Amino acid sequence: MTTQFNDRRVMLAEFPIKSEKRDEFLQYTTENLALSRSAAGNIEFDILIDEARSDQVFFYEVWESAEAQRAYMAWRVERGDLNILMTFLAGEPKFTALRRIES
Image (tube, rainbow, N blue to C red; front, side, top):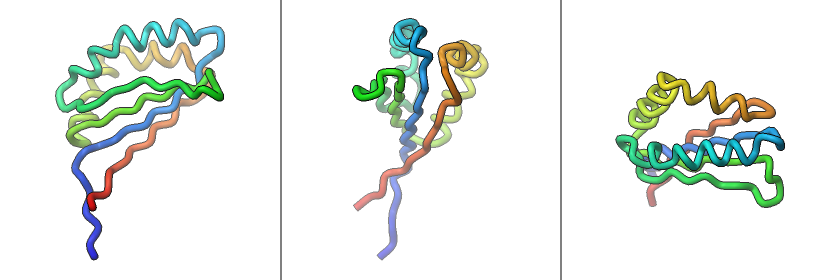
């Protein structure tokens, strides 16, 4: 049996937020959510909050391809959005790239 993978890229980004910056972070990211969702190749983009740890926020992203996701990240870096995002963080963000196994 050969394992087949879907070409889509699923990204899970975890952000440890400074507690005093949480509301400002959520406002900033939700204001920019429409831009993320309208990016070329984006299928889904959600902002999720860990109910047990309110200082942990996740981005769940589904992209048509790894190339589409990389182009989006390059665009965000060029705009300076990642620098702004880092000002809200209490530590390093964690990024996980995932691929769905087809059955």
